[in-house]
Structures are given as C-alpha cells and as structure tokens.
Length: 164
Image (cartoon, rainbow, N blue to C red):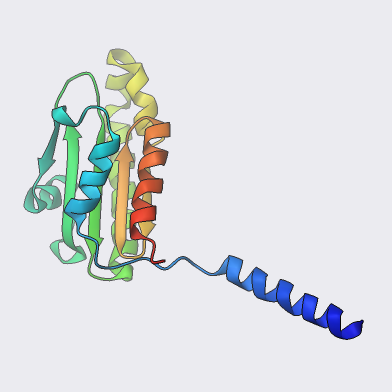
C-alpha cells in the first residue's frame, strides 16, 4: 500500500512539474507567414497597409539591432485605428527589450490619441485602451484591435509558434 501511495505521489509531482514547464517556441517561422495567418482571420485586410522594416523601425522608434524581421499592418480608413505588428528578434533578451519598447509605444499612442478618440470616435478608444503586447520566445506581437479579435490573433500566433 505504501509503495502504491509513493508511486501516486511521484506521478502527481511529475504531472505538476510538466504543467509548470514554460512553453518552447519555434525560431524558424517567417514573419510573413504569421502575417498571412493573421490577415486570414481579419475581416478587413483590403484596407490594411504594410510598413517595410525600415519604416517600422522609424515609426516605432526601435533600435535596428533588436529584430531580424518585422511587419506592421495598419488601417488606412479614417473610421478604424486597427493595427498590429509582428517582430522576430535575434534573441529572447532582445524580444524582452522590444516588448518593453512596444508597451511604451502603446502607452504613448493612448495618451496622444485619447482626447481625439473620445470626441471623434469613442468606440475606437477601447481598442487602444485594451491593446496588448505578447512575447512568444523571440517573437513579439502587439495588436490594436477589438478585444475578441486581438485575443484570437494572439492565440493563433502562439499556436503557430509553439514547438510541439
């Protein structure tokens, strides 16, 4: 009986350790492929424009050495502020630094656009207030989308990057 209890305890400890293990993410997924998947779930991609990496670095004030590939897609209509970005960094440490810079970018955007959005298009303000940055290994993703769509986008990106 004691042996069976010991085995049971060992199994529970092993399961608990497995459940706490940090996810492992792939390093070989092209940003363009992730972008195509994200666009496939959005309903209005015909009005999104893409910025090339040099424009992105300038637009977001990002150091060039942080990422090896990136794309930002933004809405061109005046009705929506939808925007998202996908970045593949050279290292996980760079991704962590980039995550902080992107959070600062979103905070600056909120402060700079809050008053205008409140008076002009209050429904868009919620997107910016709830915008999010997530890191998946050496990939960093941000979204300024309606919250359910942004959550689906982050789940889709994570599923693409998880190393099974």
